[in-house]
Image (cartoon, rainbow, N blue to C red; front, side, top):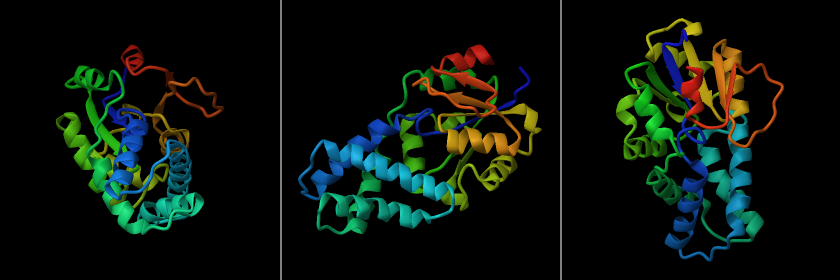
Amino acid sequence: MRYQWLLFDADGTLFDYSRAEDTALVQNFALHTLAFQPDYQLRYREINHQFWLRFEQKQVTANELRIGRFRQLFIELDIAYDAEAFANTYLDQLAQQAHLIEGAAELIQTLNGRYHLALITNGLADVQYPRLARSGLESYFSAVVVSDEVGVAKPNPGIFDVAFERMNQPAKNEVLIIGDSLSSDITGGITYGIDTCWYNPNGQSSDLPITHKIKTLHQLNEIL
């Protein structure tokens, strides 16, 4: 295969973000001595997902995302509490969660030395960098690009411009992006003119012109 660079998404591709999110939410409710119900997790996940979609489309800023998702959650749950204070400590809790998807560590270790590896993630810098360091994978990536840090998020071509600059401007046909999100990773890669690999463990369907599709991470080795 012609690829020289593998450009990985983080959450939902290498990191088990759902587990991290659930754990951080439970711990943060306890920290603020607020009563917690299991159905709060699903509602927060839905609200958070919508905020991230709006962020990708430049409809909200990173700070509006950070606080607004909890402000909306508290309104819907009829909880009278300071959303900003809750948001600040939630990020501390989330930064401690470095759970990897099964097979992620082994995959990265196998690819190391055979390909140049980079990470491109829509996230907050003060969350993503500590999680990456805790995961034990940090040293494998030659370049790391976090949307919050560079001021633009996938699928916007601007974040890919930053990534390619940090990767020393490889030819586009030498780069493959691997990610789970159709709206950010795959659409972003297609728009930018690079090959895409959709990590799709749930077997969803899509009409996008995706280069490769995998259901498990180890299948990436088979493609390469």
